[in-house]
Length: 556
Image (cartoon, rainbow, N blue to C red):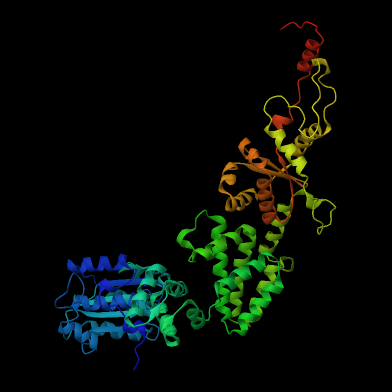
Protein backbone atom coordinates (compact mmCIF):
# COMPACT_ATOMS: atom_id res chain seq x y z
CA UNK A 1 0.00 0.00 0.00
CA UNK A 2 1.29 3.47 -0.93
CA UNK A 3 2.52 5.51 2.02
CA UNK A 4 1.80 9.22 1.75
CA UNK A 5 4.70 11.65 2.00
CA UNK A 6 3.91 13.18 5.38
CA UNK A 7 3.95 9.69 6.96
CA UNK A 8 6.88 8.43 4.91
CA UNK A 9 9.12 11.38 5.82
CA UNK A 10 7.97 11.90 9.42
CA UNK A 11 11.05 12.83 11.53
CA UNK A 12 12.48 10.12 13.76
CA UNK A 13 14.84 12.40 15.74
CA UNK A 14 14.60 15.92 17.17
CA UNK A 15 17.35 16.95 14.75
CA UNK A 16 15.05 16.11 11.81
CA UNK A 17 12.19 18.36 12.99
CA UNK A 18 11.93 21.42 10.73
CA UNK A 19 11.40 24.96 11.94
CA UNK A 20 10.93 24.36 15.71
CA UNK A 21 14.35 24.96 17.34
CA UNK A 22 12.74 26.60 20.39
CA UNK A 23 11.20 23.20 21.21
CA UNK A 24 13.74 20.62 20.02
CA UNK A 25 16.82 22.30 21.51
CA UNK A 26 15.19 22.60 24.94
CA UNK A 27 13.90 19.02 24.96
CA UNK A 28 17.26 17.57 23.90
CA UNK A 29 19.04 19.59 26.59
CA UNK A 30 16.64 18.39 29.30
CA UNK A 31 16.90 14.76 28.23
CA UNK A 32 20.70 14.94 28.10
CA UNK A 33 20.72 16.13 31.72
CA UNK A 34 18.21 13.50 32.76
CA UNK A 35 15.50 16.01 33.62
CA UNK A 36 12.31 14.25 32.54
CA UNK A 37 9.14 16.13 33.55
CA UNK A 38 5.95 14.32 34.45
CA UNK A 39 3.69 16.37 32.12
CA UNK A 40 4.31 18.26 28.87
CA UNK A 41 1.94 20.48 26.90
CA UNK A 42 2.55 21.02 23.17
CA UNK A 43 0.51 23.84 21.60
CA UNK A 44 0.43 25.39 18.15
CA UNK A 45 -1.40 25.39 14.82
CA UNK A 46 -2.00 22.22 12.84
CA UNK A 47 0.78 20.46 10.98
CA UNK A 48 3.67 22.06 12.87
CA UNK A 49 5.04 18.88 14.51
CA UNK A 50 3.30 18.53 17.89
CA UNK A 51 2.38 14.84 17.57
CA UNK A 52 5.70 14.07 15.87
CA UNK A 53 7.71 15.58 18.73
CA UNK A 54 5.50 13.78 21.25
CA UNK A 55 6.33 10.41 19.65
CA UNK A 56 10.04 11.24 19.50
CA UNK A 57 9.96 12.28 23.17
CA UNK A 58 8.18 9.04 24.12
CA UNK A 59 10.93 7.00 22.45
CA UNK A 60 13.73 9.21 23.79
CA UNK A 61 12.76 8.81 27.47
CA UNK A 62 12.68 5.01 27.02
CA UNK A 63 15.67 4.56 24.67
CA UNK A 64 18.42 2.33 26.00
CA UNK A 65 21.23 4.18 24.17
CA UNK A 66 20.16 7.80 23.57
CA UNK A 67 22.43 10.03 21.47
CA UNK A 68 22.51 13.68 22.62
CA UNK A 69 18.88 13.48 23.70
CA UNK A 70 17.71 11.74 20.51
CA UNK A 71 16.52 8.12 20.41
CA UNK A 72 19.04 5.83 18.79
CA UNK A 73 16.40 4.06 16.68
CA UNK A 74 18.30 0.77 16.85
CA UNK A 75 17.74 -0.64 20.35
CA UNK A 76 14.97 -3.11 21.05
CA UNK A 77 12.81 -0.47 22.77
CA UNK A 78 13.02 1.95 19.81
CA UNK A 79 12.29 -0.82 17.32
CA UNK A 80 9.44 -2.20 19.45
CA UNK A 81 7.80 1.20 19.82
CA UNK A 82 8.17 1.85 16.08
CA UNK A 83 6.67 -1.55 15.16
CA UNK A 84 3.93 -1.36 17.83
CA UNK A 85 4.97 -4.48 19.70
CA UNK A 86 5.61 -2.56 22.96
CA UNK A 87 2.43 -1.15 24.44
CA UNK A 88 3.89 1.10 27.11
CA UNK A 89 3.32 4.20 24.92
CA UNK A 90 -0.40 4.92 24.46
CA UNK A 91 -1.73 7.51 22.04
CA UNK A 92 -5.29 8.69 22.73
CA UNK A 93 -7.52 10.89 20.57
CA UNK A 94 -9.42 13.10 23.01
CA UNK A 95 -11.91 14.07 20.32
CA UNK A 96 -13.40 10.56 20.39
CA UNK A 97 -12.47 9.66 24.00
CA UNK A 98 -13.52 12.81 25.79
CA UNK A 99 -15.65 11.34 28.58
CA UNK A 100 -14.79 10.89 32.21
CA UNK A 101 -14.84 7.08 31.78
CA UNK A 102 -11.89 7.23 29.35
CA UNK A 103 -9.87 9.33 31.79
CA UNK A 104 -10.65 6.96 34.68
CA UNK A 105 -9.36 4.07 32.56
CA UNK A 106 -6.10 5.96 32.02
CA UNK A 107 -5.77 6.63 35.76
CA UNK A 108 -6.27 2.94 36.58
CA UNK A 109 -3.70 1.82 34.00
CA UNK A 110 -1.17 4.39 35.23
CA UNK A 111 -0.87 2.57 38.53
CA UNK A 112 0.75 -0.44 36.82
CA UNK A 113 4.46 -0.41 36.06
CA UNK A 114 5.61 -0.54 32.41
CA UNK A 115 5.92 -3.99 30.86
CA UNK A 116 9.16 -3.42 28.94
CA UNK A 117 10.08 0.26 28.89
CA UNK A 118 11.20 2.57 31.67
CA UNK A 119 8.22 4.96 31.44
CA UNK A 120 4.57 4.48 30.59
CA UNK A 121 3.82 7.45 28.29
CA UNK A 122 0.31 8.76 27.52
CA UNK A 123 0.01 11.02 24.45
CA UNK A 124 -3.39 12.76 24.56
CA UNK A 125 -4.01 14.52 21.23
CA UNK A 126 -6.56 17.35 20.90
CA UNK A 127 -6.76 17.48 24.68
CA UNK A 128 -8.99 20.56 24.59
CA UNK A 129 -11.86 18.27 23.53
CA UNK A 130 -12.04 16.64 26.97
CA UNK A 131 -15.12 17.48 29.00
CA UNK A 132 -14.92 19.51 32.20
CA UNK A 133 -15.62 16.36 34.24
CA UNK A 134 -12.80 14.52 32.46
CA UNK A 135 -10.39 17.39 33.16
CA UNK A 136 -11.32 17.41 36.84
CA UNK A 137 -10.80 13.65 37.04
CA UNK A 138 -7.34 14.02 35.47
CA UNK A 139 -6.17 16.87 37.70
CA UNK A 140 -4.91 14.90 40.69
CA UNK A 141 -3.09 12.28 38.63
CA UNK A 142 -1.63 14.99 36.36
CA UNK A 143 -0.28 16.87 39.38
CA UNK A 144 1.22 13.88 41.22
CA UNK A 145 1.49 10.95 38.82
CA UNK A 146 3.39 7.75 39.62
CA UNK A 147 7.15 7.99 39.04
CA UNK A 148 6.95 5.78 35.96
CA UNK A 149 4.26 7.82 34.10
CA UNK A 150 4.73 10.74 31.67
CA UNK A 151 1.81 12.68 30.17
CA UNK A 152 2.19 14.53 26.84
CA UNK A 153 -0.79 16.72 25.97
CA UNK A 154 -1.17 18.23 22.48
CA UNK A 155 -3.70 20.85 21.41
CA UNK A 156 -4.37 23.49 18.76
CA UNK A 157 -6.63 25.55 21.06
CA UNK A 158 -4.74 26.13 24.26
CA UNK A 159 -7.17 28.87 25.35
CA UNK A 160 -9.82 26.19 25.96
CA UNK A 161 -7.74 24.43 28.61
CA UNK A 162 -8.39 25.02 32.30
CA UNK A 163 -5.79 27.14 34.13
CA UNK A 164 -5.35 24.26 36.58
CA UNK A 165 -4.21 22.04 33.69
CA UNK A 166 -1.82 24.67 32.31
CA UNK A 167 -0.15 25.18 35.67
CA UNK A 168 0.70 21.48 35.97
CA UNK A 169 2.52 21.11 32.62
CA UNK A 170 5.71 22.23 30.95
CA UNK A 171 4.42 24.25 27.99
CA UNK A 172 6.09 24.31 24.56
CA UNK A 173 4.70 26.54 21.80
CA UNK A 174 5.10 25.40 18.20
CA UNK A 175 5.37 28.24 15.66
CA UNK A 176 4.21 28.38 12.06
CA UNK A 177 7.06 27.26 9.85
CA UNK A 178 8.58 29.97 7.67
CA UNK A 179 7.90 29.54 3.92
CA UNK A 180 11.60 29.59 3.01
CA UNK A 181 12.40 26.82 5.53
CA UNK A 182 9.42 24.79 4.39
CA UNK A 183 10.33 25.21 0.71
CA UNK A 184 13.81 23.83 1.43
CA UNK A 185 12.32 20.75 3.10
CA UNK A 186 9.95 20.22 0.16
CA UNK A 187 12.86 20.34 -2.29
CA UNK A 188 14.70 17.70 -0.21
CA UNK A 189 11.65 15.41 -0.24
CA UNK A 190 11.16 15.90 -3.99
CA UNK A 191 14.81 15.02 -4.62
CA UNK A 192 14.45 11.80 -2.60
CA UNK A 193 11.35 10.97 -4.66
CA UNK A 194 13.33 11.48 -7.90
CA UNK A 195 11.09 14.39 -8.89
CA UNK A 196 11.87 17.93 -10.04
CA UNK A 197 10.36 20.75 -7.96
CA UNK A 198 10.86 24.34 -9.13
CA UNK A 199 11.85 26.83 -6.46
CA UNK A 200 8.89 29.12 -7.22
CA UNK A 201 6.55 26.12 -7.02
CA UNK A 202 8.01 25.14 -3.64
CA UNK A 203 7.47 28.67 -2.30
CA UNK A 204 3.90 28.68 -3.63
CA UNK A 205 3.17 25.37 -1.88
CA UNK A 206 4.70 26.75 1.34
CA UNK A 207 2.60 29.93 1.19
CA UNK A 208 -0.55 27.92 0.50
CA UNK A 209 0.13 25.61 3.46
CA UNK A 210 0.18 28.64 5.81
CA UNK A 211 2.94 27.36 8.08
CA UNK A 212 1.79 23.70 8.24
CA UNK A 213 4.42 21.33 6.87
CA UNK A 214 1.99 18.40 6.86
CA UNK A 215 -0.36 20.34 4.57
CA UNK A 216 2.57 21.25 2.34
CA UNK A 217 3.68 17.62 2.00
CA UNK A 218 0.10 16.57 1.23
CA UNK A 219 -0.13 19.20 -1.53
CA UNK A 220 3.27 18.14 -2.91
CA UNK A 221 2.02 14.54 -2.93
CA UNK A 222 -0.99 15.66 -4.94
CA UNK A 223 1.20 17.56 -7.40
CA UNK A 224 3.50 14.56 -7.89
CA UNK A 225 0.43 12.52 -8.77
CA UNK A 226 -0.06 14.86 -11.74
CA UNK A 227 3.52 15.26 -12.92
CA UNK A 228 7.07 14.44 -11.84
CA UNK A 229 8.03 17.95 -12.99
CA UNK A 230 6.24 20.25 -10.53
CA UNK A 231 5.91 23.85 -11.73
CA UNK A 232 3.87 26.80 -10.54
CA UNK A 233 1.12 25.91 -13.02
CA UNK A 234 1.01 22.37 -11.61
CA UNK A 235 0.47 23.74 -8.11
CA UNK A 236 -2.29 26.08 -9.30
CA UNK A 237 -4.10 23.18 -10.95
CA UNK A 238 -3.65 20.73 -8.07
CA UNK A 239 -4.69 23.17 -5.34
CA UNK A 240 -7.44 24.95 -7.29
CA UNK A 241 -5.72 28.30 -6.77
CA UNK A 242 -6.21 31.45 -8.81
CA UNK A 243 -3.08 32.78 -10.48
CA UNK A 244 -1.60 35.87 -8.83
CA UNK A 245 -2.37 38.00 -11.86
CA UNK A 246 -6.07 37.30 -11.28
CA UNK A 247 -5.81 38.67 -7.75
CA UNK A 248 -4.14 41.82 -9.04
CA UNK A 249 -6.86 42.17 -11.69
CA UNK A 250 -9.59 41.96 -9.04
CA UNK A 251 -7.86 44.60 -6.91
CA UNK A 252 -7.51 46.85 -9.97
CA UNK A 253 -11.21 46.44 -10.74
CA UNK A 254 -12.02 47.59 -7.19
CA UNK A 255 -9.67 50.58 -7.56
CA UNK A 256 -11.21 51.50 -10.94
CA UNK A 257 -14.79 50.97 -9.67
CA UNK A 258 -15.38 48.50 -12.51
CA UNK A 259 -17.83 45.81 -11.35
CA UNK A 260 -18.17 44.34 -14.87
CA UNK A 261 -14.46 43.41 -14.97
CA UNK A 262 -14.68 41.83 -11.51
CA UNK A 263 -17.74 39.74 -12.43
CA UNK A 264 -16.11 38.57 -15.66
CA UNK A 265 -13.09 37.42 -13.62
CA UNK A 266 -15.30 35.42 -11.26
CA UNK A 267 -17.10 33.79 -14.18
CA UNK A 268 -13.82 32.85 -15.85
CA UNK A 269 -12.40 31.24 -12.69
CA UNK A 270 -15.70 29.48 -11.97
CA UNK A 271 -15.66 27.91 -15.43
CA UNK A 272 -12.11 26.73 -14.71
CA UNK A 273 -13.46 24.94 -11.59
CA UNK A 274 -11.49 27.09 -9.16
CA UNK A 275 -12.44 26.93 -5.50
CA UNK A 276 -14.31 30.21 -4.92
CA UNK A 277 -14.11 29.86 -1.16
CA UNK A 278 -10.32 29.69 -1.38
CA UNK A 279 -10.35 32.53 -3.94
CA UNK A 280 -12.17 34.74 -1.44
CA UNK A 281 -9.57 33.90 1.19
CA UNK A 282 -6.77 34.70 -1.26
CA UNK A 283 -8.38 38.06 -2.06
CA UNK A 284 -8.55 38.84 1.66
CA UNK A 285 -4.85 37.95 1.97
CA UNK A 286 -4.04 40.09 -1.09
CA UNK A 287 -5.83 43.11 0.41
CA UNK A 288 -3.93 42.48 3.62
CA UNK A 289 -0.75 42.85 1.57
CA UNK A 290 -2.08 46.13 0.15
CA UNK A 291 -2.78 47.33 3.70
CA UNK A 292 0.78 46.53 4.77
CA UNK A 293 2.23 48.30 1.71
CA UNK A 294 0.03 51.30 2.45
CA UNK A 295 0.87 51.63 6.14
CA UNK A 296 4.49 50.42 6.34
CA UNK A 297 7.63 51.69 4.68
CA UNK A 298 9.04 48.17 4.27
CA UNK A 299 6.72 45.24 5.13
CA UNK A 300 9.61 42.80 4.64
CA UNK A 301 8.71 39.17 5.25
CA UNK A 302 5.20 40.06 6.43
CA UNK A 303 4.13 39.82 2.77
CA UNK A 304 4.71 36.37 1.31
CA UNK A 305 5.06 37.30 -2.35
CA UNK A 306 7.67 37.33 -5.08
CA UNK A 307 9.46 40.50 -6.14
CA UNK A 308 7.18 41.22 -9.09
CA UNK A 309 4.03 40.54 -7.05
CA UNK A 310 5.23 42.89 -4.31
CA UNK A 311 5.97 45.66 -6.80
CA UNK A 312 2.47 45.25 -8.23
CA UNK A 313 1.01 45.51 -4.72
CA UNK A 314 3.00 48.67 -4.03
CA UNK A 315 1.78 50.30 -7.24
CA UNK A 316 -1.84 49.40 -6.54
CA UNK A 317 -1.58 50.56 -2.92
CA UNK A 318 -0.62 54.03 -4.17
CA UNK A 319 -3.79 54.27 -6.27
CA UNK A 320 -6.09 53.18 -3.42
CA UNK A 321 -6.89 54.89 -0.13
CA UNK A 322 -6.59 53.10 3.19
CA UNK A 323 -10.40 53.15 3.76
CA UNK A 324 -10.80 51.40 0.37
CA UNK A 325 -8.40 48.63 1.40
CA UNK A 326 -9.88 48.18 4.89
CA UNK A 327 -13.38 48.08 3.43
CA UNK A 328 -12.21 45.33 1.08
CA UNK A 329 -10.86 43.30 4.00
CA UNK A 330 -14.15 43.65 5.89
CA UNK A 331 -16.25 42.65 2.89
CA UNK A 332 -14.16 39.59 2.01
CA UNK A 333 -14.10 38.35 5.61
CA UNK A 334 -17.87 38.76 5.79
CA UNK A 335 -18.26 36.91 2.49
CA UNK A 336 -16.11 34.03 3.80
CA UNK A 337 -18.45 33.59 6.75
CA UNK A 338 -21.54 33.67 4.54
CA UNK A 339 -20.09 31.18 2.04
CA UNK A 340 -20.40 28.39 4.60
CA UNK A 341 -24.19 28.66 4.51
CA UNK A 342 -25.01 30.06 1.05
CA UNK A 343 -24.10 30.01 -2.62
CA UNK A 344 -20.37 30.66 -2.85
CA UNK A 345 -20.44 32.27 -6.28
CA UNK A 346 -23.30 34.62 -5.41
CA UNK A 347 -21.66 35.71 -2.16
CA UNK A 348 -18.34 36.45 -3.88
CA UNK A 349 -20.02 38.36 -6.71
CA UNK A 350 -22.05 40.41 -4.24
CA UNK A 351 -18.88 41.23 -2.30
CA UNK A 352 -17.06 42.46 -5.42
CA UNK A 353 -20.02 44.55 -6.60
CA UNK A 354 -20.26 46.19 -3.17
CA UNK A 355 -16.56 47.03 -3.30
CA UNK A 356 -16.72 48.41 -6.84
CA UNK A 357 -19.89 50.44 -6.06
CA UNK A 358 -19.61 51.66 -2.44
CA UNK A 359 -22.71 53.81 -2.90
CA UNK A 360 -24.72 50.55 -2.84
CA UNK A 361 -23.25 49.54 0.53
CA UNK A 362 -24.59 51.00 3.76
CA UNK A 363 -21.89 49.52 6.00
CA UNK A 364 -19.62 51.81 8.06
CA UNK A 365 -16.64 50.88 5.87
CA UNK A 366 -18.44 52.01 2.71
CA UNK A 367 -19.53 55.25 4.39
CA UNK A 368 -15.93 55.92 5.40
CA UNK A 369 -14.78 55.41 1.80
CA UNK A 370 -17.31 57.93 0.52
CA UNK A 371 -16.38 60.47 3.20
CA UNK A 372 -12.70 60.00 2.38
CA UNK A 373 -13.44 60.63 -1.30
CA UNK A 374 -15.27 63.86 -0.43
CA UNK A 375 -12.48 65.07 1.84
CA UNK A 376 -9.81 64.27 -0.75
CA UNK A 377 -11.72 66.24 -3.38
CA UNK A 378 -11.55 69.35 -1.17
CA UNK A 379 -13.87 72.39 -0.92
CA UNK A 380 -14.46 72.39 -4.67
CA UNK A 381 -16.86 69.47 -4.24
CA UNK A 382 -19.21 71.71 -2.27
CA UNK A 383 -19.45 74.18 -5.12
CA UNK A 384 -22.21 73.98 -7.69
CA UNK A 385 -20.06 72.20 -10.28
CA UNK A 386 -21.29 68.97 -11.91
CA UNK A 387 -19.29 65.99 -10.65
CA UNK A 388 -18.62 64.73 -14.17
CA UNK A 389 -16.90 67.92 -15.33
CA UNK A 390 -13.12 67.94 -15.02
CA UNK A 391 -11.54 71.12 -13.67
CA UNK A 392 -9.90 73.38 -16.24
CA UNK A 393 -6.43 72.40 -17.33
CA UNK A 394 -3.75 74.18 -15.28
CA UNK A 395 -2.19 77.28 -16.77
CA UNK A 396 1.54 76.60 -16.88
CA UNK A 397 2.42 80.31 -17.03
CA UNK A 398 0.47 81.02 -13.85
CA UNK A 399 2.17 78.08 -12.13
CA UNK A 400 5.65 79.26 -13.13
CA UNK A 401 4.94 82.80 -11.97
CA UNK A 402 3.51 81.56 -8.66
CA UNK A 403 6.48 79.29 -8.04
CA UNK A 404 8.89 82.09 -8.92
CA UNK A 405 7.09 84.38 -6.45
CA UNK A 406 7.81 82.00 -3.61
CA UNK A 407 11.48 81.68 -4.59
CA UNK A 408 12.02 85.46 -4.51
CA UNK A 409 14.16 86.44 -1.53
CA UNK A 410 14.07 90.01 -0.27
CA UNK A 411 12.28 92.78 -2.22
CA UNK A 412 10.24 91.88 -5.31
CA UNK A 413 12.21 91.56 -8.52
CA UNK A 414 11.14 93.09 -11.82
CA UNK A 415 8.35 91.29 -13.70
CA UNK A 416 8.97 88.03 -15.54
CA UNK A 417 10.91 87.76 -18.77
CA UNK A 418 7.75 87.52 -20.81
CA UNK A 419 6.93 91.24 -20.27
CA UNK A 420 9.23 94.31 -20.58
CA UNK A 421 10.77 95.54 -17.34
CA UNK A 422 9.74 99.07 -16.35
CA UNK A 423 12.50 101.70 -16.53
CA UNK A 424 14.09 102.76 -13.23
CA UNK A 425 12.26 105.66 -11.56
CA UNK A 426 12.78 107.82 -8.48
CA UNK A 427 11.63 106.43 -5.13
CA UNK A 428 8.50 108.57 -5.10
CA UNK A 429 7.35 106.93 -8.32
CA UNK A 430 7.89 103.39 -6.99
CA UNK A 431 4.19 102.58 -6.41
CA UNK A 432 3.36 103.41 -10.05
CA UNK A 433 2.10 100.72 -12.47
CA UNK A 434 3.62 97.27 -12.39
CA UNK A 435 3.14 94.49 -14.83
CA UNK A 436 -0.34 93.08 -14.15
CA UNK A 437 0.46 89.33 -14.05
CA UNK A 438 3.15 89.27 -11.32
CA UNK A 439 1.15 91.61 -9.08
CA UNK A 440 -2.02 89.64 -9.67
CA UNK A 441 -0.21 86.33 -8.96
CA UNK A 442 1.33 87.71 -5.78
CA UNK A 443 -2.11 88.76 -4.48
CA UNK A 444 -3.79 85.56 -5.62
CA UNK A 445 -1.23 83.29 -3.94
CA UNK A 446 -1.53 85.12 -0.62
CA UNK A 447 -5.32 85.15 -0.81
CA UNK A 448 -5.56 81.50 -1.77
CA UNK A 449 -3.17 80.51 1.02
CA UNK A 450 -5.36 82.26 3.59
CA UNK A 451 -8.37 80.16 2.51
CA UNK A 452 -6.54 76.86 1.92
CA UNK A 453 -7.10 73.68 3.91
CA UNK A 454 -4.54 71.04 4.84
CA UNK A 455 -4.28 68.24 2.22
CA UNK A 456 -4.10 64.84 3.94
CA UNK A 457 -3.19 62.79 0.85
CA UNK A 458 0.09 64.65 0.26
CA UNK A 459 2.32 61.82 1.68
CA UNK A 460 0.74 59.37 -0.77
CA UNK A 461 1.50 61.75 -3.63
CA UNK A 462 5.14 61.94 -2.54
CA UNK A 463 5.28 58.13 -2.50
CA UNK A 464 4.01 58.10 -6.06
CA UNK A 465 6.62 60.72 -7.03
CA UNK A 466 9.32 58.64 -5.31
CA UNK A 467 8.51 55.63 -7.48
CA UNK A 468 9.40 57.76 -10.52
CA UNK A 469 12.22 59.92 -9.11
CA UNK A 470 13.68 59.51 -5.64
CA UNK A 471 15.66 62.77 -5.92
CA UNK A 472 12.52 64.85 -6.53
CA UNK A 473 10.70 63.13 -3.66
CA UNK A 474 13.72 63.75 -1.40
CA UNK A 475 13.58 67.47 -2.21
CA UNK A 476 9.99 67.58 -0.96
CA UNK A 477 10.78 65.72 2.27
CA UNK A 478 9.04 67.39 5.21
CA UNK A 479 6.82 69.51 2.95
CA UNK A 480 3.09 70.08 3.28
CA UNK A 481 0.29 70.79 0.84
CA UNK A 482 -2.97 72.72 0.99
CA UNK A 483 -5.97 72.81 -1.32
CA UNK A 484 -8.45 75.50 -2.14
CA UNK A 485 -10.76 75.16 -5.09
CA UNK A 486 -8.81 73.95 -8.11
CA UNK A 487 -5.43 74.92 -6.60
CA UNK A 488 -2.91 72.71 -4.84
CA UNK A 489 -0.53 74.92 -2.86
CA UNK A 490 2.77 73.44 -1.72
CA UNK A 491 4.79 74.53 1.31
CA UNK A 492 8.29 73.20 0.61
CA UNK A 493 11.98 74.26 0.69
CA UNK A 494 13.29 76.43 -2.11
CA UNK A 495 15.20 73.59 -3.78
CA UNK A 496 11.91 71.80 -4.42
CA UNK A 497 10.56 74.75 -6.41
CA UNK A 498 13.84 75.00 -8.30
CA UNK A 499 13.15 71.45 -9.50
CA UNK A 500 9.57 72.37 -10.39
CA UNK A 501 10.84 75.00 -12.84
CA UNK A 502 11.53 72.09 -15.19
CA UNK A 503 8.47 71.00 -17.18
CA UNK A 504 9.23 67.28 -16.80
CA UNK A 505 9.23 67.56 -13.01
CA UNK A 506 5.97 69.52 -12.98
CA UNK A 507 4.41 66.90 -15.24
CA UNK A 508 5.62 64.18 -12.88
CA UNK A 509 3.99 65.92 -9.89
CA UNK A 510 0.74 66.53 -11.80
CA UNK A 511 0.60 62.89 -12.82
CA UNK A 512 1.10 61.73 -9.22
CA UNK A 513 -1.61 64.09 -7.98
CA UNK A 514 -4.05 62.84 -10.61
CA UNK A 515 -3.31 59.17 -9.86
CA UNK A 516 -3.88 59.58 -6.12
CA UNK A 517 -6.82 62.02 -6.12
CA UNK A 518 -8.37 61.34 -9.53
CA UNK A 519 -8.41 65.11 -10.20
CA UNK A 520 -6.29 67.70 -11.98
CA UNK A 521 -5.16 70.63 -9.82
CA UNK A 522 -3.32 73.84 -10.61
CA UNK A 523 0.01 73.96 -8.81
CA UNK A 524 1.23 76.92 -6.81
CA UNK A 525 3.27 77.91 -3.75
CA UNK A 526 1.79 78.29 -0.31
CA UNK A 527 2.30 81.68 1.35
CA UNK A 528 2.42 81.50 5.12
CA UNK A 529 0.29 84.19 6.80
CA UNK A 530 3.25 85.74 8.58
CA UNK A 531 5.03 86.08 5.23
CA UNK A 532 2.29 87.32 2.94
CA UNK A 533 -0.62 88.37 5.16
CA UNK A 534 0.96 90.64 7.86
CA UNK A 535 -0.55 94.11 7.92
CA UNK A 536 1.81 97.10 8.17
CA UNK A 537 1.65 99.19 11.33
CA UNK A 538 -0.01 102.61 10.65
CA UNK A 539 2.75 104.50 12.48
CA UNK A 540 5.43 102.79 10.40
CA UNK A 541 3.52 103.68 7.24
CA UNK A 542 3.30 107.35 8.31
CA UNK A 543 7.02 107.49 9.13
CA UNK A 544 7.90 105.96 5.79
CA UNK A 545 5.85 108.50 3.87
CA UNK A 546 7.38 111.38 5.85
CA UNK A 547 10.88 110.23 5.03
CA UNK A 548 10.01 109.97 1.35
CA UNK A 549 8.67 113.56 1.43
CA UNK A 550 11.86 114.81 3.09
CA UNK A 551 10.19 115.77 6.39
CA UNK A 552 12.48 115.11 9.37
CA UNK A 553 11.09 112.65 11.89
CA UNK A 554 12.22 112.75 15.50
CA UNK A 555 13.12 109.47 17.10
CA UNK A 556 11.31 108.74 20.32
